Length: 143
Image (cartoon, rainbow, N blue to C red; front, side, top):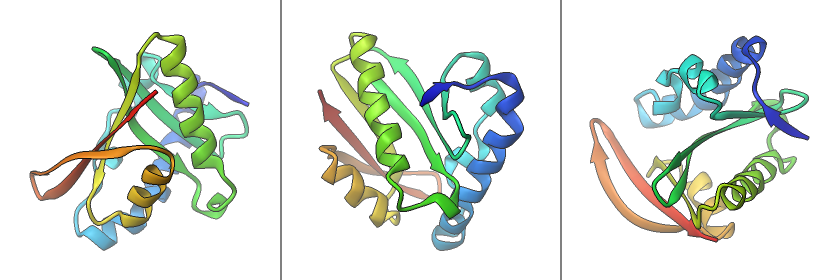
């Protein structure tokens, strides 16, 4: 089950994000943006949803005409169990419930495994551009 995050979940949320993105930070040579996000603000805004057993989370931000998938993070020891896919399916359900016809996300161009997963799930690359020291890929999925 996926539920809205609660204030008491914040330390675990921060722990999951740090653990999930640390290997990527080492690969790309800079901290991925989710590692520096204001998780407390996202929590207060109702943007964070967690698996009820706290093995993973997704940050969803409604925007004009699209639901922005700001972050998908799963505990590293839980990879390969379909939890990321489950969280992304939830994002589609949430977008539909909000009347939003599409999802969008960004990821680092060096995160090729993630890009391949998003493409398998129906996302398309819409552009690629630098943001600071990062080479960022923009992706979208129309529902």
